[in-house]
Image 1: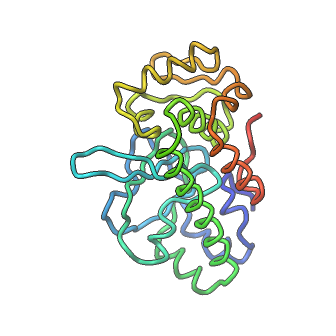
Image 2 (image 1 turned 90 degrees about the vertical axis):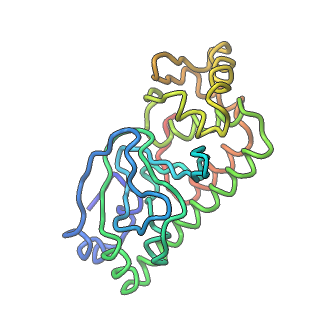
Length: 234
């Protein structure tokens, strides 16, 4: 059976058959928290049209994105397999569909199926590599290049060049203050690469935006392409 999520679609038929009774289609609103930081993971989530974000939340309430998840991934997978509390907050950065699955059901099947366990570990390793690339990017690259990278990654995951985004979320994703993001986005807007109004982002020139992006976008894209994780929006 084909799903709109690459992890589910890559599972063997016997694994899908075992998990199917537990799968639930859900709609998540923008900003909805699916897994709270320091919480036990009761469900994992496979995005089908939503885009999810994992963030680290500091004591003063500030947030920094660790990874973005679209149809190529799953949220809560690592904590599910280890049984440990989540160190990150998982929420919907773009509203849409997800497929929910009780964590206990996934862990039990993974322990019984080496093929499923290997698939999950492969996907989680890809997510970890992307998170590591993001750490280097936020530390070493300028904000406009980071914003260009993140917008391109979001376009790849949504399959569209237009999506809703607030300045607050943009600031978290890029790792800058909210007061800074307006100027950063305006720089790309003046170059005719994006249009941004009333919380709606439109990418006008993907090729030009890729020129503005740092090397991290190509690194992440090439890695995902090699694993067949994303259908790119060109």
